[in-house]
Image 1 (cartoon, rainbow, N blue to C red):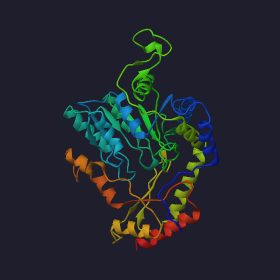
Image 2 (cartoon, one colour; image 1 turned 90 degrees about the vertical axis):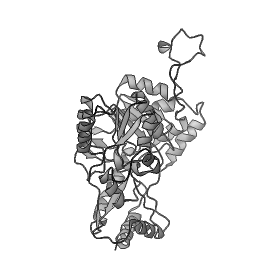
Image 3 (cartoon, rainbow, N blue to C red; image 1 turned 180 degrees about the vertical axis):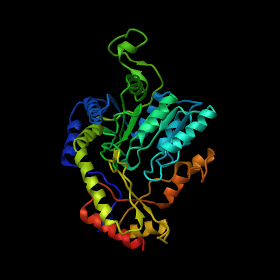
Length: 387
């Protein structure tokens, strides 16, 4: 059997045809397919607006800028995430801090957030932006975060890079019911892909207009917001300092085609989760917890090793899995333990739940094209290597 990856894109003939159609059209960069993709993502999520960008890191960056994050401000996020969730604050010259994770969901803990906020209020050091991360596709418990945030005029940006297609309290992730903005990723290993690409959804028109400017050099061609009458049909104005974070028509065409299949993609992932629950029931590992108020998109399938029953090191387990054709992965090394963040003053011991999780976590293969036979093989190999 060839190597079974932890994740893989699923590309159909329809996807290929959609991209070819754009190649044959008059538009390759900013055109009508991007606008259609934005409208359909917004409609799918139940949000008023969506802004497509080159990748989710760009989406996080301009979301922070639209929120007014800058020098002297602070951003809080989860330590159990990819570094981009924190780096976006540093891009804005703000300070970054973390809130430890919940032991069951591995998402940012509402209890830890409320306790940290109480201390921040006493010290007059309340953050300006909170980025909860919907780890593995399961929404954070957003309602208590939102209720606390609104007491302190704190902007919430959901990092839903893992979670398009998921829901929370009967609302689709991305509806911004309990946030100001939501960010999605369309990287190849995510639920749907545009090759690279990202999206920001929001219900606030003021944020939407800022996001549009920020993704394209701060330039507008809309006469109603210009500082003078246009000199002619060629005229444009740069109103603010922006970036070139634009998505291409090619990416949008692929993303739009993939979006049409999202429900079947997620249905297959949920089927695989149920099978893993049966296949791994006798293995000394902790299986993922599902919050009854949320429906996960299941981007990742993360188990935790029971270190009271498993004597092998995690590194040894990873090596044995690879030798037998299973490419497991690890999500994530806690951000605050990275050398760059340690130079900023963070260290091991700062966020113990995230650190304990890191010592035990293993991401097993989870993707639409994973066959039943391959999944059974993964489970059987896992049983054998933890003995």
